[in-house]
Length: 253
Image 1 (cartoon, rainbow, N blue to C red):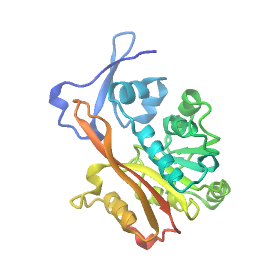
Image 2: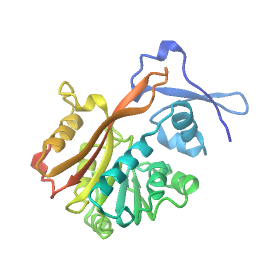
Image 3: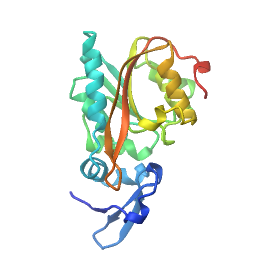
Image 4: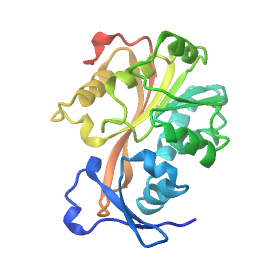
């Protein structure tokens, strides 16, 4: 089903990514204003997320990050089909679906938005072997043990870092659920790697990239999607191997 969506007029084009919104026109003619980051509301309407971000704004991050992860994995002659992947900020499953095409052994989705799980099983029913609604800043010992039992050797996070969707502490927790010599594949807005950005998340990512605990395989700048005024938004896709446990002192939590 195609929805009647409308991006705001030019006077709103100064808004940041975190402030952006669009209008959804209902059958009765009523217009609903929906922020780009109100994922719970967007997921409630089947096909709306894909239409606004993938059809209209041409997002291609799941494909770019998955392709780089596969390329890095193949470069050391490992079998991609043996990967056990934790997909953090899984949303309605488009990243899981992209990973599934390469035949990963296990893919487990995690999101903090309750509606995400329902949307993932509705929109991408075969993508995940499990799906959790959890806050990774507040995992108790029982839940932490449950995640450890999956024996993850890969973490993916796409279009969910740096805007408050996934805090530094949550991402750090997820990274440390990955086994030694496991893979981490994610993307960040290009400005987050600039020294002028002194936000906690930006400093964390730069610390990781320079850390002896990581081996970076790819850092590739690419067009993540268009902004609401049609201007390309550039991100970095990053694929690295985690060599050992990341101590808290490596990062500024």
